[in-house]
Length: 496
Image 1 (cartoon, rainbow, N blue to C red):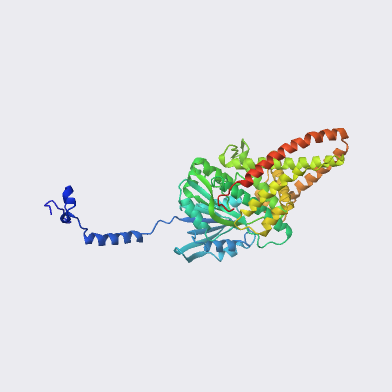
Image 2: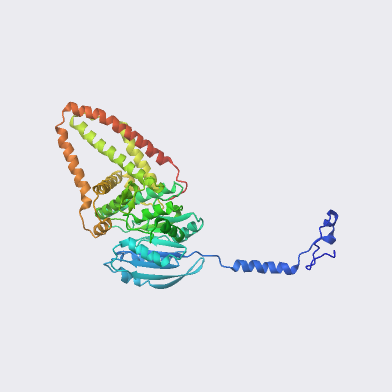
């Protein structure tokens, strides 16, 4: 060997081409280094990987019937939150007593090893800020963790939901929050009204979920039912919005406003591709009306330009484009149905009604689109298909939604100072008559139109029909084309 060999016995001199093929100069590995390499790789594999921390907060208001199921589902996750805080506020039932049975440490063996968490139950008593106050109280307890998981007191996730949310949000630092795919459990319902309303809400949720999935999984609203947030994103929202807390009471839809702020702070708001959760549905017309009016009113408040108190309308915000589209679609649906009914009644009164076979095309297009929505559900069942194929249930539910839509816009323009949170809580207790107003107004309008029509001269009636039918035809053709285009698009393997 050359005199310049190093201390390990290797020749450090550059070998000539002839020497490189000479067996005398072939370098042999040191067996001591090989043994050390194996030991080193074993030690590297033994180093635990970083596990992001997740703090779960559950705002609970009169959730005595459901809070046990929510906590059970969280404690049986494949990825258990590192801490769970149940924030009970303004409650009048036994929520505190039931939740207290879960307080304390919990350990569970999973496929990834033993996991532990601690459940804390906080009864904050009278809370004027209601759910918003409970959320902010919970945030103050977990703000040092990597992620905040918000769960409603009546939402039960699938066993792998938390794991999917954590994996997805940890995979991309640009993501500020991810919402689960929501559905409603319809397995334990009593009465035809409850079954009908839950079927309508399941279809409504499914259509909304799929619409967001097909738009690059960009979610306009990170629903508070079951969503995970990056605490770094929330801290950036606090700094840029000059807020002390992530959720503010200025908006009727606190989750929508926070989603807008996260997006404005430069983060992405997404819907999960796999995490699923079952949320509580509204099983009475009264409670459904209160919920939907609150949602619509809050959306309008965010959409409409101008400053109203502490709320500033953001009509051009990217997260509100889908909202605008939904509201414009509702206006078109209302217009076509009202025109068809009025023109049909007018034609019958002067015996000028002539059925056209092509009139069945729009209803068939609507049924096919609704069928595809039902078929896209992960947990679809016979009731979901019947809701669509019987036609009348889906049409009647659409009319109910129209009533909510009109009520919300009237409340907004009348500038009523109404606590819609309190109205919803009152409705869920079985009180209040506001849900009947749309039906009463519709009955009065139709009755008035019918009476007025009898006083219109026949020639005038004929002229109105000759103008009205073509206008309705053009609108209906455009609407039908849009439904057909939606019904033929691919779902790319997504399940709502």
